[in-house]
Length: 295
Image (cartoon, rainbow, N blue to C red; front, top):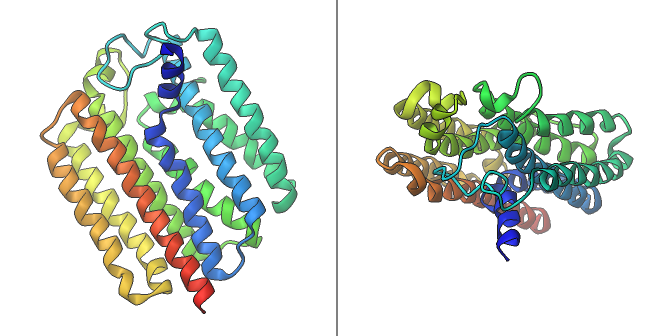
């Protein structure tokens, strides 16, 4: 039972909404434009989740190998570091999940074009490059950039493309919005882990710019994300402009509270930031489906 809990923790269920939100947002765009195709759409959902799980596993394994984790850290328990999961088991899990993701990616390429195999390979490498390689992104203050690209731009644009075989400006704006929301999830994570990261020499953006500027960046990201997604909400109905506005207000209130907390007390803010991102995407999807069948 203890080992099972360790594996569930390694999946990091709190962060799964980050990958799901991008796909759901793309589904919303597809319904709005009338080109939703359920088979490639669902395949993209599985692919996104698998890639995130692989990235989470790789982060745990390679941070352990590089000595960037330590026992009793403030964040979620790391099974490999704490001895609940062997390094070999985690290494096998990383590449097993990537293999399954690759199989799903081949099916996606059938619908979107075989050139997408190269895109899938880049995504797989990105899942590893976040934590390992000659220039690990997570240790060079590039984690938020990686999240913006691989959990915003890539899933939204790719999921839309395999259904429509084209991309438009509103889809790109939506992808930027999702990417910024996802970056905020990582900001909370790194904001919480500043003491642990500094103790092992891990240079995240938050450990470089500090607590105050991390909070400010969180609010800025939320504001820009709302501006980017606003046109899509208004395409469905002009009355729904209030939703992106509420997102900014909620994020600002959360940031104000976050500024006063430390350590493990910040973990719920990470989960809530991810949930808020998911709520935004699911809400837009529900409205887009209603609009599609009502018109």
